[in-house]
Length: 98
Image 1 (tube, rainbow, N blue to C red):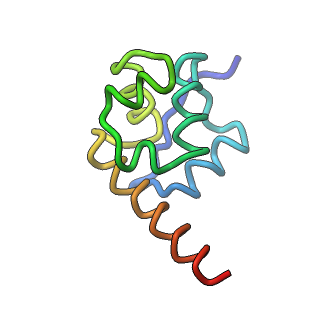
Image 2: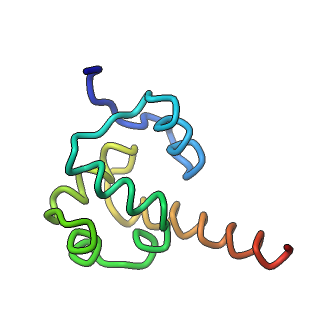
Image 3: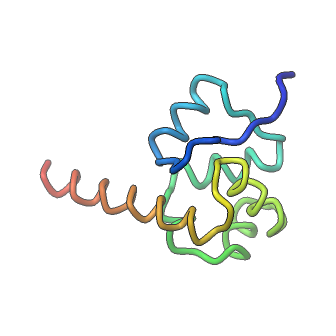
């Protein structure tokens, strides 16, 4: 199995994170992958929920949520929330146009 990596982008965007995962440049341990699936499928969860709520929904510990946040290139959940909130805004604007 390839070594685990972080997103390493200076300012990771939601799309960049998803691209790295799709290319298998970014791999997660099984428990962290549960958080990744939840938050990438439903970005509003990370954008607006507490760490404890995210952990409960993914069936993992709060520290696993924070590991996910670090692995995708953020130093804390606040930074990740901003990026995921931007994605939610983008999706909202896009869906209103269609």
